[in-house]
Image (cartoon, rainbow, N blue to C red):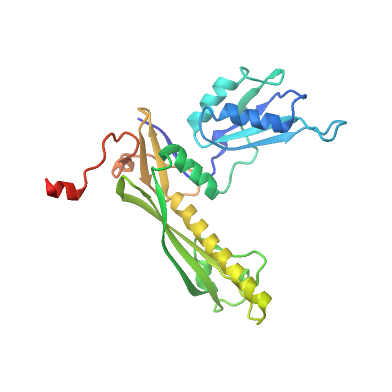
Length: 289
C-alpha cells in the first residue's frame, strides 16, 4: 500500500546515483546541464555534483570524470538507474549509472536548506497547496546555561557568546520566532516551528557601532525565521501510495538512525491532499441550509 515516505531531511546514499563514462570532449558544465535535464524527468532532484578530470593543455576546459545525482525519492532514483544505465549518451559514450556506495555512511541527519524545503513542498503539494506564516516574533533575554539547552540555537562562531563554559549566568539577548505551516483545505493540520538566535551587540557609543548593532539584529531576526521554517518542515512526512495518492503526516523525528517505521498508527490522522474534487462546504453554508 505505502510506496514511499518523503521527509525534509538530506537524503541518504540509497537515493543517490553514481554516474560515470562521460566523453572527454564534453565539458563539466555541459554534463551537469545534461544530467539536470535528463534526471529531472524521473523525479525531484535534491542535488547534482560533478567531479572533474585533471585539466588538459587548454586549462580553460575540463571534462567530467564522474557525477552524483541525489533524489528525494528512492523510487525515482531506482527508476532513473534502470532507464539510464547504458541507454543514454552524453557525448559519444553511453553513461554508466549505479547506486552510490560511500565508504563512510552518513552519520548526522540534517534538515534540508530552506530553499530546498520550498522546492519539495511545491513539488508534492503545488504552490497553492500550503502556506507559511509567522505566529510570533519576540526579543528575550536568556542565560547561557538555558541557551545551551535550546534545540534550535544558532550562535555566531566568531563571537564571545559562543564560549558557553565561561559564565553560565551571563545574560544574552535573543530573537525567538515561531512559524506555522498550514494547508488551506485542511485547517486542522499544521506544524509549528521554532527558531532561536542570539543578538551580538556592542556597548560602545558610536555611529558605526549603532549601525552594526542594527545590522546584527536584522541578521538575527532573519536567522531565527529561517531556523523556525526548517524546524516546521522537519515535522512533515509525505506518504505516497501505490495508487498515486498522497497523504501528509505531522511527525517529529526522535531517532538518530534515519529510519522511520510505518505502522497503522501513521494513518490515524491522515490527510488526503491530491484527490479532492469538490471544495469543502463551510459551516456558514451548512447553517444557512
